[in-house]
Length: 109
Image 1 (cartoon, one colour):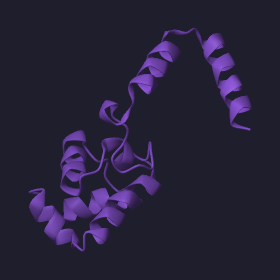
Image 2: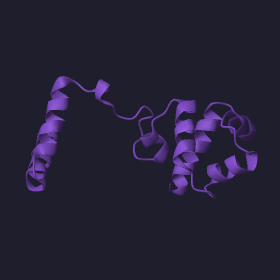
Image 3: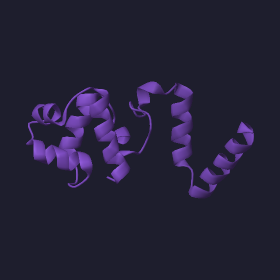
Image 4: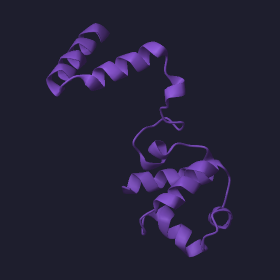
């Protein structure tokens, strides 16, 4: 994780009005180890990242900084048409995908 992503862990904790000690206890971690994760001194292991995401009800994509939507993107949020478009797009070669993206940009203007 990059430093700004560790900020998300801290922000989630603060938004939940929890102390570092409270979160460390919930995760069954020593306070010092949790502090290291939160400030980026130690790499956040996947199992701890999953526990943190579960604790705050956010996606791992959000926690890692891959998206800004706390829930992330999942198929349940997509319409049938969106799923069809995504599957069709993925089946295309990179050149054709580029053409689709160019056309999309033209349609959006």
